Image (cartoon, rainbow, N blue to C red; front, side, top):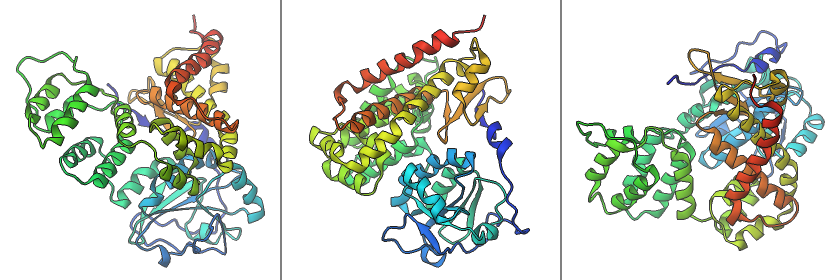
Length: 437
């Protein structure tokens, strides 16, 4: 099978803007980071204005953006998600624009971003970083040197590397199972949380088992082993410190699926093992991590009393009013991509289809003959990840719509509601676009 190869979005490439800065050369990877001190910082709260010296020992991501820049605005949800995901792991995100505070403040109020935003109308910092295209992202390591220069869409791997975080799902799965044999609950949870962040929907479970020492039989077995049940057994076996481990690995090495939805299994396991608590909900709301709170409600089986805390939060309610239509629209775009270009179906009205889906970019197979992913809301949604991605966006939209109306969502029937909503969106699309003759 051809592997996806992200390409620069056509829409993005066609409207990247050049900044007229006097010849400053952009720092390269390995160079000391130029100063990023500014007079005007927004969204600081009680934090100290950021400086190079003050942030030594932390990883800093600088996002050069502007409210006037379409590609920048489409990328900012991705930047916000990195802020939410890694802020507790020593990442500091600084979003710098040359717009004045009076211009940029209404944008922040409307979007609800919680990262630190800097105003640089004199282009002092923009000039020292040699910014010529928008958006541009720099990642600065804990040593104060540039670790990454490029697009915000490619920054996450650089951030993880700078933070010293393991990113391989196979390594993370092994590490978590090994920790299960011990009694350190905090370490177990931390390991499962990290696996939850990096698990994929097309994980080679058979290959993982072979790498762990599972032996293959001379006659190849059919792929009929239930991956979810097999991993449930792994948990039980590893907790007993390995008794029966080899036999289980042998079974997996011969009959486990080579494309397994590890992401869904880990999400389900994490929710069952660590239901969302009142304390965690209050912390998420206090940190204004609205989308993370919604995801936690969808996936971590909270009690009614926990959901009630969210229902009563006015700021979350306002966020949900703004976000749930966009979230549903993102799901619709992914549904369109999954059922047409990713299936190599040509819509009846091809021009109208692409005008409606309006994605900012896509990835192609190596032979350039098929679309393997589309860029939606700052994320590259691949064919293998699309079903889960659609489910999660629809679940979030349903929950947010309920909160916007100051009511509690019916979580017990959430999966059924998601499927119903999926079909509700798909039916008129099938009628309008169907398949070309």
